[in-house]
Image (cartoon, rainbow, N blue to C red; front, side, top):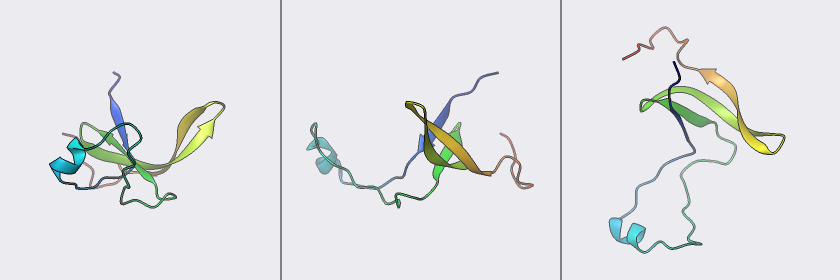
Length: 76
């Protein structure tokens, strides 16, 4: 059964007024180091961490930590 996943590079908080001023070309700086693993989320829950790599002409993910296999992970 396929499920949708999301890859999260980082996050930040910013005022709504600043968001409304964004236009094409605006740059938003995240709170994450460039070499930090990204989070893989399923149904809003982090299930793994990975490095972003390239595979031929596309982006790919190299899993560095599988949290589903952790003993304290419980499916909802």
